[in-house]
Length: 90
Ligand code: SF4
Ligand code: SF4
Image 1 (cartoon, protein in one colour):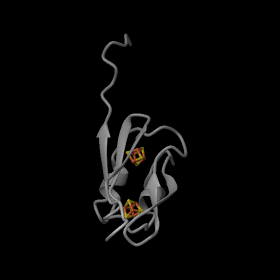
Image 2: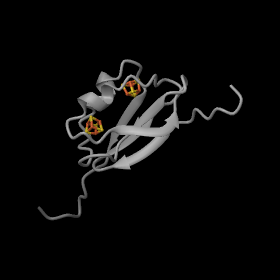
Image 3: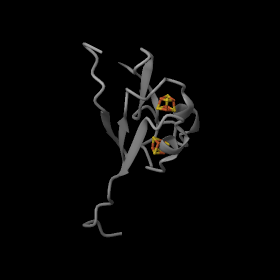
């Protein structure tokens, strides 16, 4: 589709790296409903149907629980956990 950029949208929030694949996201909103820290919101970037796509950064920081990745019916999200800072003394 000319003019469409379907490269993954990459966001870093809290403990997670959030990848959104616009060629798969239909904008159903299930990921927004299920995120336990309500960090997912709508962006102005669109998916393959022309609907808004989700991104983190709207609530408390992402805890990298991966619930959004599991509930997405279209496998449009991938979460990578950011490793804890090993240099920190707890
Ligand atoms: S659950 Fe999946 S398809 Fe639905 S809005 Fe979220 S990323 Fe898009
Ligand atoms: S990994 Fe968990 S906390 Fe992070 S955006 Fe997804 S559902 Fe929310």
